[in-house]
Length: 163
Image: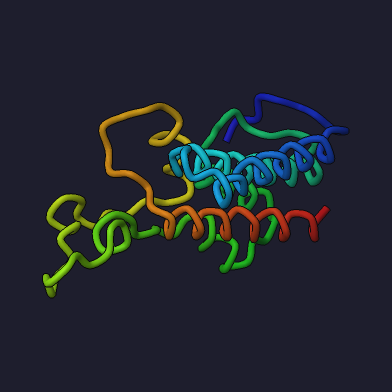
């Protein structure tokens, strides 16, 4: 991957910015009148910025990309080992919609909401593209939000241990 930006002294600033995004994402635990998509977007940003901080710390540069997949690939291409659990946190899918969205209704033995919002999958990386702007898409539910928050937190903790 081509490196476009060189920043040999700003790894700490990038990690601080990642933590600020994670703080914004955590507001979703209290602010129930804001779409979870916006908080998930900040989860993705936190993960992205922390991986860029690690690249800056180790190599003094980072590529122009928002893709967690590309950042992880770049780290590995430069002999920076990434534990499988961290790769999983960044790249695994999260189920949302369907049963998780509305729960069971009255006398029905099946979740009515699966007829309205069938289950879907999204990765932490998808939040950068799908949740940045309002679109006609299935809403992110509290479960997917909490999973995204946990994943971003795990990535930041791991990066902190490397720096």
